[in-house]
Image 1 (cartoon, rainbow, N blue to C red):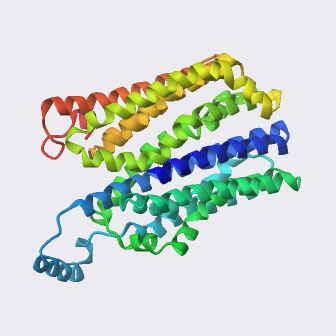
Image 2: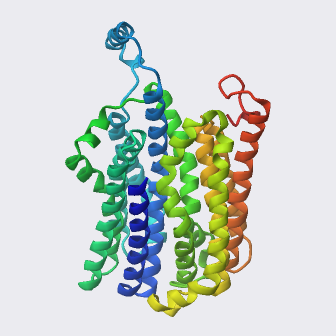
Image 3: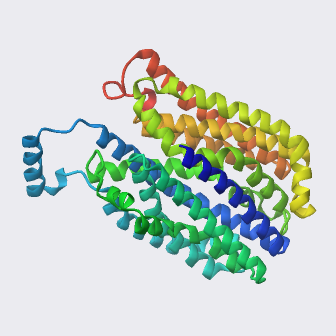
Length: 431
């Protein structure tokens, strides 16, 4: 955990510095386009994090099962050879198919929306996005395998190198005066970090042989459910700026949302970026305490709530002056906006924790429902006729809070009834 903690700090610092470098190296309009593309890519990788989460859960569960007797193992092996479909799959072996599907889907649908996000770099923007997402599919699986094996040093190195490469290339682009295309490349390049980790670590390569706890079809089904939920998760966390631009329509001109987008990105990073990195560890923790998962979630929920409250007060007084030391005045929001956005980031953090608890309890539908409720309510709020700052604050407060309340409520009801999910499904089909 010490390695992950250190890597998380480096990831947060590198993320801030990349944004700062982009602000210095690009015009206000180009900087806004970069921030939207940055949000789009990480929102889409957030969808693929569902593969990481399900890989972590499936391999952790498989590894926790008692070792079968030698004779039974031999019998199972003979049966698997006669009927391979009865043998549980290696998640990494399935990843290639998922990666191809992801890349093709991005290329096929991209022309419908890429022009709205990066109008000056539609071709390269879409191509880089498709290749980056296909590559990140493997990275998500490798992260899940490392987490399930408690290979935290390798996991930490992957995180640190991923962010470090982006920062180094961003600095090069700034020094050489390169424009938006270079920063789009910077955005996606870190998705290839898994290749370096596998090349340098024998223990990391050994995890590629690990198997899931279920057959290929249910594994892929659960992965798809996790992707749907983590996609809503990603929209709320890293892709919210994309949603804000779309719901703002033609009422704002180029660069007009730069300050709001910067405020959303910077105020949410201190809480949500570390929590995202620790989410696999949370799932493993909740899986070990599946019989009392709600109690296990109480401490992290309390902790992030306290951090959000303290951070909100600090941001009100300190964020704007600190931003003034590094960023142009055109992208600095008011102290009240910065304070409120920091405070409401706690709602999304709590939803991340309650969602991890639901996933560890094998309640995939509940996990998905909580995030879909959050994104639906947040989108509805963003369509109200308030200023961009007000809409963002209300959306990030209301949507995640209701989603987390639903997840925690169902888990509490199941705990009160004392009926495990395996023998009694959750109410209203949220099992």
